[in-house]
Image (cartoon, rainbow, N blue to C red):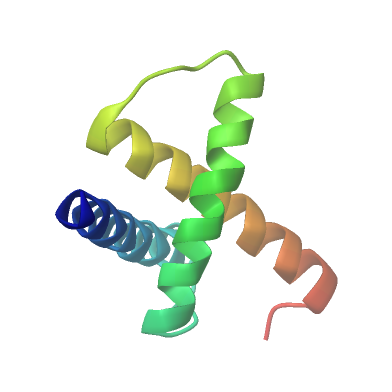
Amino acid sequence: MERAVSISISGWIVIGLIAGWLTGKLTRGRGFGCLANVILGLVGALLGGWIFTKLGIFGGGFLYSLAAATVGAVVLVSVARMFGGDK
């Protein structure tokens, strides 16, 4: 049981890292650093999952999780830049 949890957590970290990196590329920025990108991707995964559910988009697996995380992270970055300004 403990091994399954660690694989799941490491999987989410990988998805968060990739989603954070993709978000930096999609929003024409350099990102916020490795740790911040992972956190952005993980929080984006939650937000993206909620957005996908509200839009009626359901799925599973790596690509679905990556897409949801990236969409959520892009929304987070867009909102942050709207209120914080883009420097």
